[in-house]
Length: 270
Length: 289
Image (cartoon, rainbow over all chains, first blue to last red; front, side, top):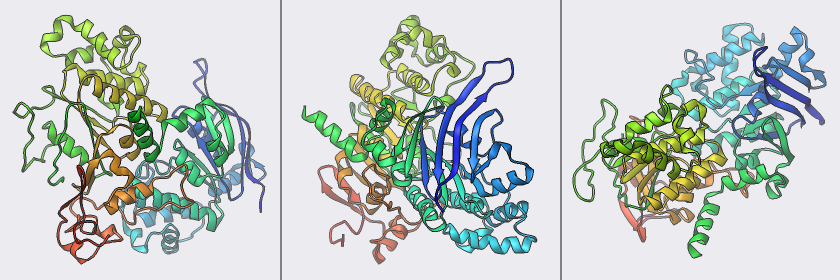
């Protein structure tokens, strides 16, 4: 199947109590994500990228515009429909520790969400399935008996991914999924995200600030600033020929190791 | 926690101590100023200052930390917080020195900043204010522990440029603690890479073009690049936690080149260029890499 899985049209999100100053966090944003593809959203803190993600999942209250998931309008879904939607669309957050219950072992964390969504009848059944899901994210069945504090950062993020996948997610929003991880582990997790896209056909909305990560993961990219999209396009094109001054600034602000060394060598030569 | 770390900080130079979480880089920095947490001690070795003696913060050593929002007191103005950091002899002309300090760190309207509370400043401005406070005591050494990690990319670049400027103008010895190799490449002169409590490779920053240690090579390959390949090469496994550090070379369980000797004995230092040395059996004399 191809075509868009998610279509967002003129989305606006505002914050602020009635009578007080209203802050418009997302100011009229439209985009679509094709099935099995990865759309990257880049911007600095305060650009509205995380609010955008929350709004897409129906987690924001003051939302205006249209969000269509698989042809159905999210903002108008009834209770049964929203439950199904929440199973199919899941989120993975930046801090892998903060998003796991410290009192639940990894296996129990997966079993819990499966029971909540009515996908497993008994505890025993849920526990047996948990091991399979841990295997899909590259964790051995023994990890089912570990508490979050007994796992490394990378392993915790794998558990978070398994928890999202085990209820049947097809669409995943990952908000800075590797920025809290060590460099040597980041690459492992990014490769895992990529292989989940390829083998399971997962559709991604990847939120981040690192253009090099986007280059690695995303097919298309949106650059956000102050609640608006200032540039968009296939990721290679945007990086090779950035049109907006802000995108250019982002690119020059984060050079690679080699670029930085070359720049300094050139400065010394002058 | 951290075992046998040799560092030499020179005036007007930036030395980077690089490593992943739990490698001991921040503990090393804390030990320099006598700021080790309760229950931890420096059990061997010494810290020597040119001119003699051991000195802690406020007497030649100043710190800037990762999260400026956490370090500033929310209920006092920036002015009153900088005033506290001024040495006694400057108290008489406090206002003049404070405005000078704020100008040095790039504020155009120092008066307005002095009267501001931390929440009225952006993250980048807060970090500038922290720098001003650190410079108030006229330190010879500035320890910057992940000074830009909490900031946005574009702000990060500005703070790094400022740090490089200050180091030159004030002739400071800067110890930069970071996990970010690109930051190191931008401002450091020398670099020491730590893994699980030990320095594994040291040298001039240009060594990042061709590092010798398999761990350092792995770190560079694991970085996503704008011109990179389709698939990243991560390093298998993860950093061993304290108490489960392997014997011999601490990197050997994750190293593709390890042999029997790596698990048995700690590798000695091997010189591999001017100021460049590496602790690795595979790339040492008689090695196989």
